[in-house]
Length: 103
Image (cartoon, rainbow, N blue to C red; front, side, top):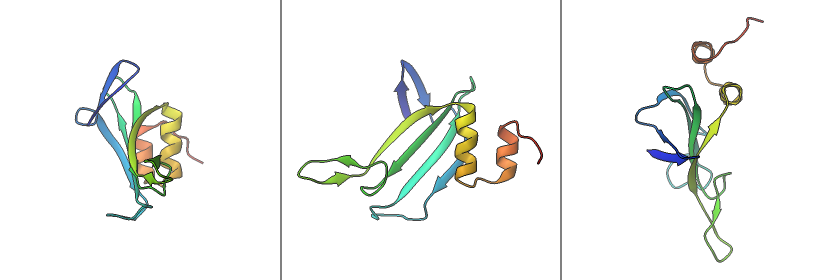
C-alpha cells in the first residue's frame, strides 16, 4: 500500500516490516484493530493501521453512525520503540531494531 505524507511516498511493499500487532478480534467485529510498523530505506518509521467502528480508527459515516477506517502516520525512532514495547513485541525484535540498554 502506498501513502503520500508531506510530499513523500511511503510504501509497505518497499519498506521493511518491523513488527505487527492485532487485538485478537477479526472479521466483522467492530472492535477489531491491527497495526504494522515499517521502516523505510532512509530510516523513517511509519505505522499502517486499521480498525472497526468501535476503535480509535472510527470515522463518522453520517446519521450518527461510525465506520471503521485505516490510516498511515509517521513516527520517530523513539515512538516506534515505545510502540513495540506498548504492544508487547518480542524483545529480540526490539533489540534488533533499536538501541536498548541491558537492565
